[in-house]
Image 1 (spheres, helix red, strand yellow):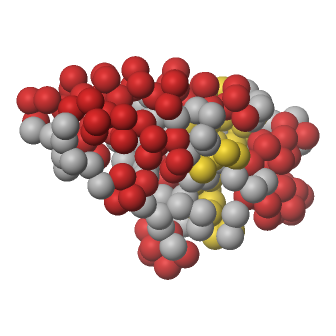
Image 2 (cartoon, one colour):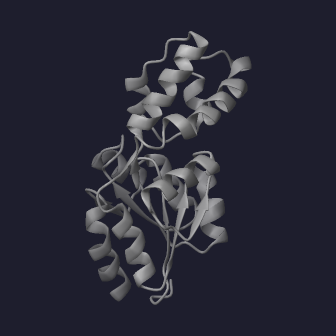
Length: 205
């Protein structure tokens, strides 16, 4: 990795943003519209995997595509304003850019809705790629030369490892330190407030 220009990937939900309030609100509207019970507390306790996987817990297989489309349509009006940036999120992205590098967001979330979050919260990533999960994230990380990937889920660790990138885990999401470490994370941080100092030390060698 060129020390003067690191490319770093970040996950979105529960890594850069706390989207639980917004996602809960979107599911509540969907449940009201469809008449289907959805345990929204359970849903937001396990964010990370693709939307289709979560919907499969609540809807028959032949309805999943349609309810996912409806959820994504509801999302801009229900989920954006209730979502906040996690501590250190903007500073982590800016730390990469201050070193002359690129900060990219690689997420399983529908890309247009992910962009709404970044724009609303003023998180100025250089690149955003949505619709990728776990090992699928390696596709984007490899294409854009990311040698570090930061995430809160074991799926993020798997994506980093598949791309032969350094995996930095943060314990702000559903997976604790032990789970991230057992999945193969190289570095564990409590949250992104610790990331800029870690990155500077890492790049310095």
